[in-house]
Length: 166
Image 1 (tube, rainbow, N blue to C red):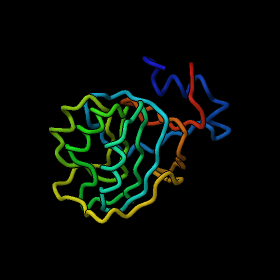
Image 2 (spheres, rainbow, N blue to C red):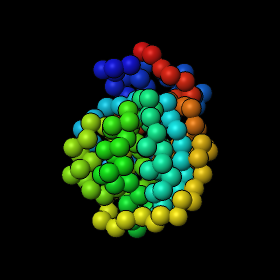
Image 3 (cartoon, one colour):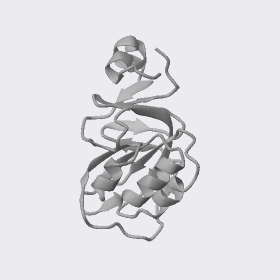
Image 4 (cartoon, rainbow, N blue to C red):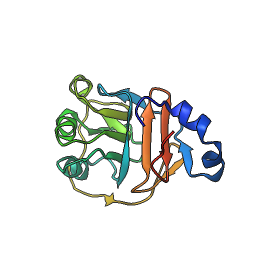
């Protein structure tokens, strides 16, 4: 689906929007990383002010997937930093969407990967390893399930039950 914008996807699929099979996240995310446009199958993770499980996922081969992390919307610390983003880039992840904060923004912005987060924050997260993998999430007013597809560009983020072609 290269070179097709999220706006074009919405225009071409009104029936999927009506049925709820294609959903747009509310526009609350900042854009980080050198890849402003990315897409792929979703892997979900739910954590709160803890980044151990995020790091574990990003150490795996990404195979073009997108890690979607519900960090509870916390703005008290960063749950994603530069080193895990470099790891994600090197392991073939297409992107990371974090309902929380990032740190080491200069390092993240040097990576060829798409990253979306609420904001940046200098404080580190906890390291307890607490969270839930492969669970349904609700982020930015949208329900997101493991295995669905995410499409992101500078206009916004879409989630689809299936891979789309326009």
